[in-house]
Length: 166
Image (cartoon, rainbow, N blue to C red):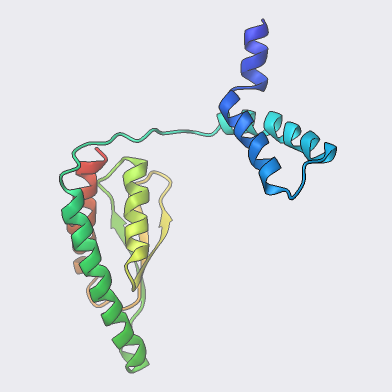
């Protein structure tokens, strides 16, 4: 009975201790009010955090990481130059648009990495992930060929990420 009470109100002692300590660190001084608030937060936050749907990262082969990072670095530099030329050039030549990218990657951590990579690359922003995690809505600053953009995202980023996050 005592074990179930502790698990219900204190599902993660390390998290409770961390919340307590960080609350006190965030304040300039330690007072009775700050200690009471820290205790209250340390008791209230972990039960809510325990209810969150967690999916732990599965890491696969890391051999594609250096190559993908090199490709990403080159794409960022190239996209910076391209976007700068587009922004400084005639506005009528820019054709923004949204595209749905079908996803083969199912690992949520791989999807998070993919959305970050897309957003890091100038000229593209990941906007919405479908509820079933099968499509990603991407805004493209200059959308000439939607199929080419989808192909580029899938081959340059998604395929290596599928090796890293199976």
